[in-house]
Amino acid sequence: MTDYAFSAIPMLERPAKPRAAGQTMMIDFGLGLRQQEDILQLAGAYIDSAKIAVGVARLLPRDTVMRKIDLYRQYQVVPYPGGQFLEYAVLCGKVDEFLAEARAVGFPAVEVSDNLLSISLAEKQALIAKASAAYGLEVYGEVGKKEGLAVTVSLEDDIRACLEAGSSKVLVEAAEIFGHGRDISLATELTAAAPPEKLMFELTGPWIEGTAYSEPDTLARWLMQNFGPNVNIGNVQPESLLRLETARRALGVNAGGELPDGLSGNATNQDSR
Image 1 (cartoon, one colour):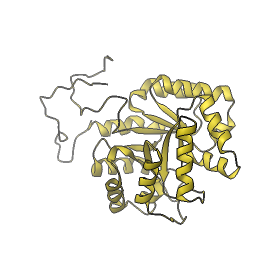
Image 2 (tube, rainbow, N blue to C red):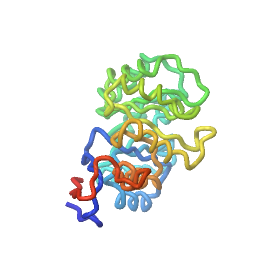
Image 3 (spheres, helix red, strand yellow):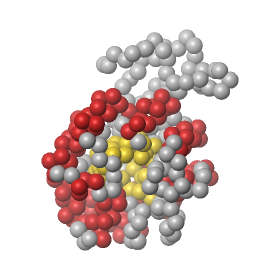
């Protein structure tokens, strides 16, 4: 068991890895191996999965990709290539080549999305089923479109279809919830479509027009205020990992100068990580 500093100071407990709820997905836009190892040594206990974004894996030497994957897996972090890369493979007619290579280099999972790709729900389900059944990969489905693109099926139906096809978890595209402010009514509707542990809400980033760089941290806190500290949150920037975990653990003072709910001044807390 790790000996943590300031262990006499209470904080909210969280499920240990591997956990179904309260997952954090980090976005990796091409971290160098030394950067990646530093982050994992510092915050690996708080990262559940890592998305190697868009087509970044195509730009790297194969050996480097394999080393990145192996390093993540050493820390019980599930790495997977971003869904837009698979969308591109679909356009190129290279789905089987993509899935075979994902398996060969050591990815344990892939993301199946239709952010920018126009495919039917049946075609999306077939992709999920193929990745799972034919290639033995865990699948994270993603629902929703990038800003400005038409949605042809309800997000609730899309979520159910992804799960029925074999997705272990469904990511919610940030532009759907945060494209025009903060849509609590839609977010609440989606949590009714699937168990909370099956959904992961993605945060915004500079790739979504009009997003302020500081906004993702604020939006993460908003998600926790509405759905609790163990809501699944994705697209977390590496530099925000510890800020997010301190918020999940209520390591701060509430408005009014009181301890957060669930803690008392005499509490003791042995972290179970």
